[in-house]
Image (cartoon, rainbow, N blue to C red; front, side, top):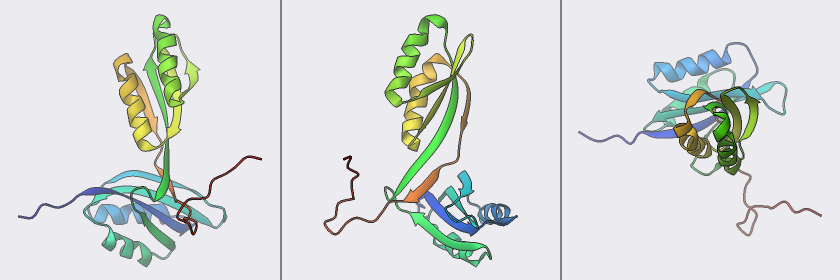
Length: 175
């Protein structure tokens, strides 16, 4: 019996902005037995198109990519290799925060760039956006205080810009 190499894949699908497209694409993954970990859909620079970012487990995605192209409203499909895309998520997490420990919790959150967006009598709600690993690390940090509630967006991704001729990425410089 051969061991299968199940890995997490990040796929972006550029689609026409039409009713039912999301349902057809998610149903196609389900019919083929792929578990979708994250699904985000949003507008693009072109008002007639939407970008879907799908994070799914599977040994390989070649067949699913071919099937995505067969759907009428699909314009472009990209499977992103690890590190080949800028990936982000946003998270809101409500943490137990007794008044005597608030300073400690706020200092810890500041290390990650988390922003307090709501303060209750015994809780603080933080907003954090970043790479998925950064959000996981933050959750591990606040877990000892007690996580009361949590919500994360689906992952979004854009392919990184191509490298310049010298092999380095362009850098922004301030004047």
